[in-house]
Image 1 (tube, rainbow over the protein chains, first blue to last red):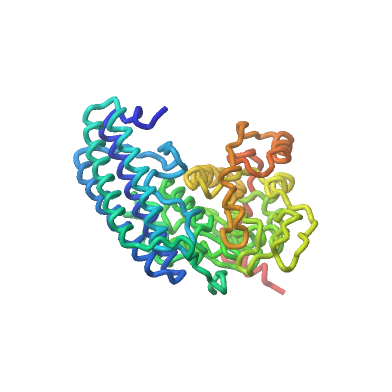
Image 2: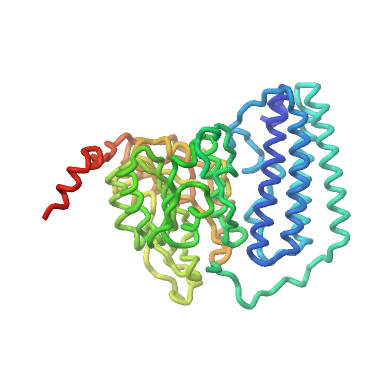
Length: 173
Length: 278
């Protein structure tokens, strides 16, 4: 069953939304830390900015949640379409040599999935208030996507310029 | 460490320390850290009532990345340390973690005896089928034809251990397998493992992007166990032999007697002093 069909009330929808945004922020911080540790400050800065924006969105949704009692949902009971939330970047896609361009492409994929998640709910939730709020969130995700597209215009595409490390990593003891 | 009074609503990140992991970007061990912290937050366990004991290796650094009490011990000896801790402090939730090399090679003897002893603790092997910290040598779970190490240019030619099978034979009362590509699923398994009374063993398939980049394709091969958890060791053995090592879930669970050594401390200092009399 589509997750949208499970969104019978704002409380459930907001619980999903908060989890989605908070997990995305934490993952972006985690990725920024990875890049810091592996001396890739430019990409670390990019992920740090993305974490900041995810956190802002999470705070906004928390504000929407005032007055609601959000259900406590176990991480494994969300039933995300992928293994994690739609806006959570896959750690397996990370590489210490990645460029800002590649980081932004990953971020755009995350925002697109988040948009699709909210958009689906805006169309298919059985609850009118949920559909309306999900529509607003979908629009915001679309704005994020457009912002990332602008960032991307200022980044060189590294195609054909794969970074080379003559001393590849091991544990830096 | 803060005390538990105000810790009713700890979030997963509250179980992490401020240290940034030095694991390679893309490493599955990040997901094990996330799964552990999610499991502990779900169970609302106060941080000061949990200890995480580790051995040596990339994955064994995990204790430092948590805000739990931890002990980064000797190579292969995490289970020995944890057994002592559990005997002395039975009220603690004791987690043990390490890699396939740490747990199944130098620590292999401790592993089989911890399984049969069945003390109430949870052991997570973060299995990437390679020694990563020392730059990529074959481990006890490496396939015999893996030839990418300079030490074994034609492969080891030695059949690998089946960690789940080994645990079953040695008498473990809870055996599960998770995958780091599904940290939420792994967290759910860890909750069951921690709640289990006795020795719970969780093999976490954890790809190494640096020395085993081909493992990044595991996400296309891992699948959920088709059968329900069994308490029958014969059935469990058949499943483990047949599943190719890539199915996830709780394979086996039984209520074998839990080993709880009596504490000499309970009998007072006099009894301890008598033990040291010459």
